[in-house]
Length: 335
Picture 1: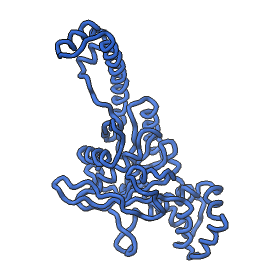
Picture 2: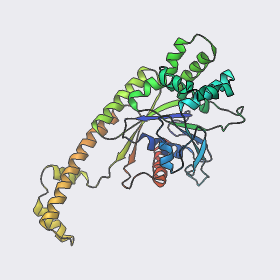
Picture 3: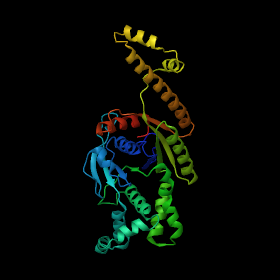
Picture 4: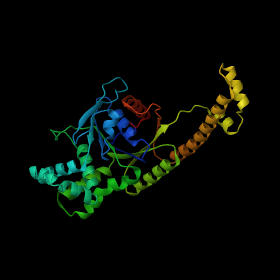
């Protein structure tokens, strides 16, 4: 069962401003996509071992590891398997040299002498070329890749919004420099995949001014470079503890200490002055926060892309929380 809103997509790229929870969304999306027996690969490229921390497993090597069973299907079908891959550029370069130039032991010798680290650190864009190349390889596998797992979907926890267009466009730049050979061929292939209907870029935001503005700018930048924009996931949405009438009354100053104390007393609670003052302060802060969030929600609604909302998990994000978010994403049609 593919994503309901993005049935043609095999590569889901997740980006967002730092602090918005893009890694959490990527992991939840992978669990949601792994429904009804489908197999999903969750990749990370930023070197932070975020997947290992979220799933409470040992730090991931440069190898595909099974980390979880996907969310069960809506009719109780068995969930698929979620594998994870931590892509580091040094290992990706050694794999590239072995695959295209048959270096074998010679490539490992280059690593011992520090040549690999030098190449991935100094050469402009080489790191991103290697990282995106590995994502491409995992996405394009088919039945002919007998020694590798073939995935129904790949989810990439990508760099932040401000860097996503250059990151995805690095192979296009490389293709313009290379005239022929395997480098030119792979760069063209990766560029074609990233601009195709089999790929989409989802953006994660929270209902705050800077993340929403960066999301708006990120969508414009992606479209400028011809990269496919998917949906916007509004993350960490706070619970609505007061309805609109109550919020309006709080903002207008109609909820006085006397009225609040009387209401507490009727409810069998203490209406002492300290408690009343604290509750009224919190109510005013909540009302102001909600007004700011609604203004940002309206801006998100003007972006002309599908939008999804995930709640703030008060107790923090653990594996149970990831499954909860995965279910919400599936119910809303993203997974």
